[in-house]
Image 1 (tube, helix red, strand yellow):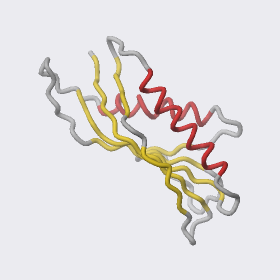
Image 2 (cartoon, rainbow, N blue to C red):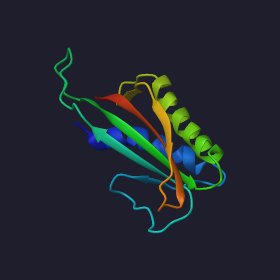
Image 3 (cartoon, rainbow, N blue to C red):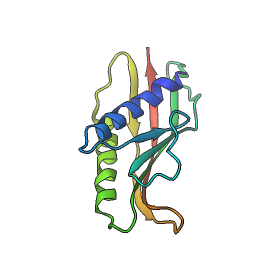
Length: 143
């Protein structure tokens, strides 16, 4: 099982999409980069979890995985939800594009399920308004 290839299939398009915005928005992934302490600027946090990773297929391949993707968007609190919703729309667009990508002979074939959310919250101690979406996924590492 190639967990890094599965992560890259999600992380690379998300990073590209948020970097292409004007202004670009920093994206922080699991155990790669840390959100600067006491930051007040907007950013995106992406968590990819692995659930079932040994699903046998008709070919007896174990290169299939299921899991969840959680995307949290942090924008300045007290300025309304519009910017947060715009950034969440960027994330949803990337996830929907993954479902439209054709299956090839190599790489990772990736599909997401229904997207839950967005949900919103604002902690009194945080300078951010947070929006969250999540979805399940199925990925197959192709030979």
